[in-house]
Image (tube, rainbow, N blue to C red; front, top):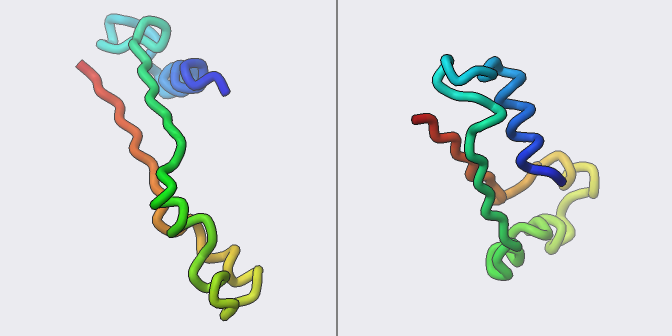
Length: 78
């Protein structure tokens, strides 16, 4: 996955295409820091409690969503 390309394409799509706008998709810095999920967190979110206890159908469990998982995305403009 080319994260820099995805970020630059998205920034370009929303209109930041020239330095005179204060931000330019082609020259902005894109920094990524992605690591594997912690084993402790994975224990809590890889399989829902309901699935572990067998109290819901697979369809009901699928409808719950991502549990405690989240994203931290930051866009800093200067």
